Image 1 (cartoon, rainbow, N blue to C red):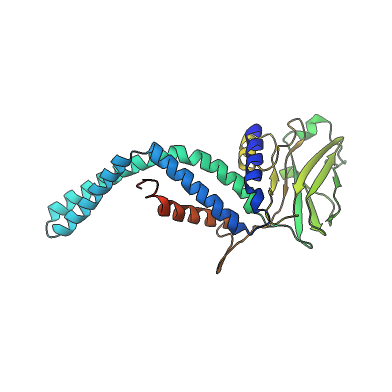
Image 2 (cartoon, one colour):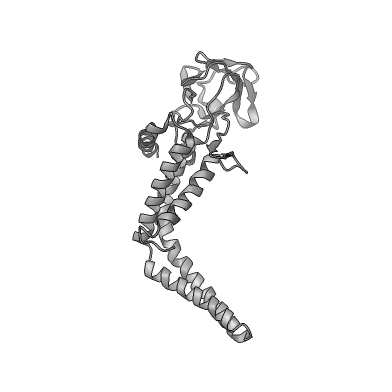
Length: 290
């Protein structure tokens, strides 16, 4: 998973490089168009187009039959049963290409999430840095701790970041937390020194469009899949993950500023809406029927 994520990071950094100085909407329009073209191509190659067209004709025929024989209860029930069977057939034919489209789409969405979902930190912003220790960290004997059992850790902050609080230890969650203040945004790396090991977390803010992640994952395969924007923490270390709070980014469209709604990032709303619009607009050119 680590090697795959590394390759995808390089690929998407390269693809989105021309859009770094442009509004987020510009890059999302291009990416949505490419995604729509890719999905149309895959749908045409992997679906039974003739079967889908036939199922749609049966559905339309059933609707016309209901309208034509609306005074016959028996005919209406027969037509509705035929429509139901045709719908099930249509769904079966439509689900097959989804098996080929959804897996690569998941990786695309995961990469775009960390390019477009989080806002550029600004001077005066505050964030919480949290280091979560791996289960059984105290048994390793490599972490200095106080008499109360609180692990000792030292922050190594770059110029432009200031710690406003000492470390807060929450034993039940195995976490050390600090509140930080941004004095000067930039491409920064936060260091957490524990014993003789240094654990780092990126905190980039020099450009509006830049790869940012709230989590640097640990050894968990699932964490690396969900948070692919940074390489994982050392597998032999005592930390399970390092997180920072990042503000959600908005996407400015002509006449409409899209913001995060019900936990759905603004970029994702724009991306899927545009992808659907492009897919329907180009379906005839690709010879695709839905």
